[in-house]
Image (cartoon, rainbow, N blue to C red):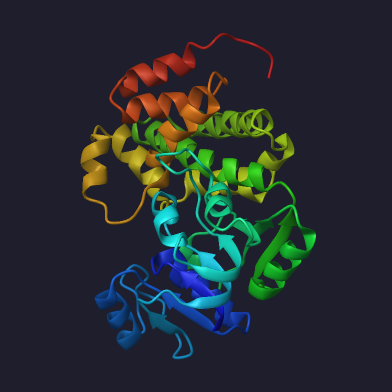
Length: 317
């Protein structure tokens, strides 16, 4: 049995495997496709993270391993199918978004599948290629159980990857889902040539939207000001490596969302999260998320989305 199993050999999973090695852990990296697992095991490189080299100590396999702790780094849309087969003492959701069918958050999916297994979520402003390179970064480990938070932090954290405990896992998950949707809007603003003032305004109102959403659904509004909220939102709305921001950038430049997404081999979580989040939020006032959902579904044009946001009634901040 491995000390740590990283489930999902995409860029993020590979980066997490490297981070766990730095933390001194015995690591197994799982890839769904046996051919891909074999290629990574032989070359010690993942084409999705080409500049990173996996040390020989990382075992790469297509057979789901048993582990003390499993870091689940698969897209949220595939979490239910994959997690059903995982056996571990602790489950850590390292994905952001909602199940597209049930609108469940990652920890809700895990609680349904493994009700007796402790679970937490790891989330924050982390680009995979920077974590893989060992550049300084921070994130949160969120769970109601303080002992569980400490255990996972001690297992994964290093001096250059600072992990903070957080006791609002619901808020952390909601922020992680919604920030990807807002990043699509930020990209569209820049792609349409509306300027940096407009992007700054959108990010700021996006934080308010995160806080409103989190508080309404049972989390804490202040979580929106932390690493999983403001921190991740800032990175995703400004970083060129963000798939959600780049989708918005393409839409702002006149491309069609479905066409852009059809050429991608990696998940753009905000495109999946937008309709699920809007459905879960009910009548809650989420103007940015609702505009993105309508835009992606071709119910409105980009010009109409922009006009609708700008025409909202004036009020105090």
